[in-house]
Image (cartoon, rainbow, N blue to C red; front, side, top):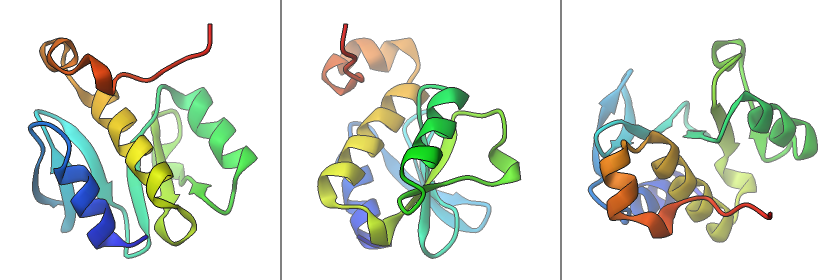
Length: 116
């Protein structure tokens, strides 16, 4: 996967548009959904800091973090290590966590699924 794949997948999400953030391509609805952190990694939202840390620990080739992200719900995905299904799933989840209630109600199918 690469930046163009991230762009296509992000722009396929409802009400998402692209603009620059910190000099990098980023995708927003009303809030930031995802942003290229550098040439190889994409910043996405996850549920919380605990999930961020667990992902990095479980799959360090795919996920990483920086001191800048400490205590946040933002994780970095190494695009080269991601497949299309993983990338699209993370972008949809990131869309959800960034969405205000009005968008969550409008697009409930994008919500994360949790085993009960």
